[in-house]
Length: 65
Image 1: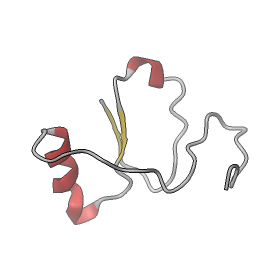
Image 2: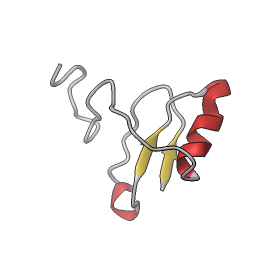
Image 3: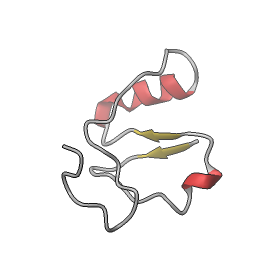
Image 4: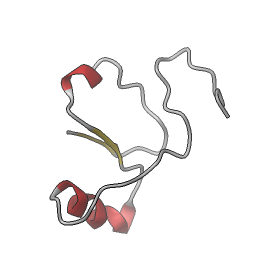
């Protein structure tokens, strides 16, 4: 499982094939405990990205919005 702590979408196309799951935790700050609870199976995982995730460096900003 790849957990991304970032303030923006990152290009992960080179590592994606090696991951069973990718979690975009963004910058959770004091709410990082919630990410740990999800990964430990203590709470149900659900979520939706607020924007499309770029496939590569040439992905147009705002594409699909």
